[in-house]
Image 1 (tube, rainbow, N blue to C red):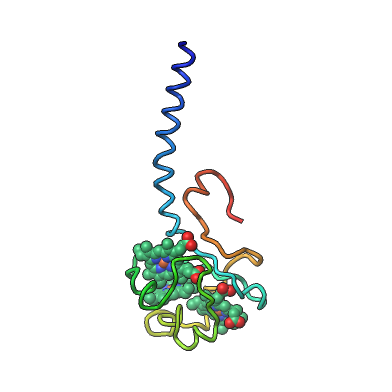
Image 2: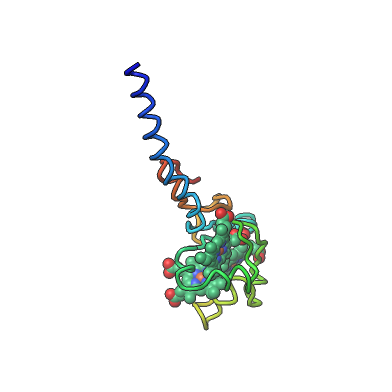
Length: 132
Ligand code: HEC
Ligand code: HEC
Ligand code: HEC
C-alpha cells in the first residue's frame, strides 16, 4: 500500500517534470535550420540558417509572408539562381540590407551529409539526442 502510493507520487512528479518539456516543443522553430535540398548534391556544404539570429532582427511576416518562406524546414526549394535574383535569402543578402552572396562559406557552413532539419532543437538536446 505504502509502496503503491509512493509509486503514484513518483509518477505524478514525472508527469509534472515532463510538462514544461512538452511546452518547450514549440520552441523548436528557434533552432538553426539546416537546408540541404540541393547543396550536397551540387558539391556545396549544406546551408545552416540561424533562425533565432534573424528572428530577433526581423518580424516573422517579413520572411514567412512577404518573402514566401514556408513554415517548414526544407519546405522551400531555394536555388542559388533565385537568391542571386533577389528572392528568399537574396532579398537581404545583397550587399545592402546584409552582406552579399559572395560569402559562400558563411551560409554553406554545414557538415557535408547533414540532412535538412531543425538543428539544435531544445527538446532533442535536453534528451541528450544528438541531431545528426
Ligand atoms: C545568404 C546565404 C547564401 C550564400 C551567401 C550562398 N548561398 Fe548557396 N545556397 C543558399 C541556400 C539557402 C541554398 C539552398 C540549400 C538547399 O536546400 O540545398 C543554396 C544552394 C546552393 C547550391 C545548390 C542549388 C543550386 O542552385 O545549384 C549551390 C551550388 C550553391 N548554393 C552555391 C553557392 C556559391 C558558390 C556561393 C558563393 C558564391 C553561395 N552558394 C552563397 C544560400 C546561400
Ligand atoms: C529572415 C527570415 C526569417 C524570419 C524573420 C523568420 N523566419 Fe522562420 N524560417 C525561415 C527559414 C528560411 C526557414 C526554413 C525554411 C526552409 O528550410 O525552407 C524557417 C522555418 C520556420 C519554421 C519551421 C521550422 C520547422 O520545424 O520545420 C517555423 C515554425 C518558423 N520558421 C517560424 C517563425 C516565426 C514564428 C518567426 C517570427 C518569430 C520566424 N519564423 C521568423 C526564415 C525566417
Ligand atoms: C529579412 C532579411 C534577411 C533574410 C531574408 C535573410 N537574412 Fe541572413 N542576415 C540578415 C542580416 C541583417 C544579417 C546580419 C548581417 C550583419 O551582421 O552584417 C544576417 C546574417 C546572416 C548570417 C550570419 C549570422 C551570424 O551569426 O553572424 C547567416 C549565416 C545568414 N544570415 C544566412 C541566411 C540564409 C541562409 C538566409 C536564407 C535562408 C538568410 N540569411 C536570409 C538578414 C537576412
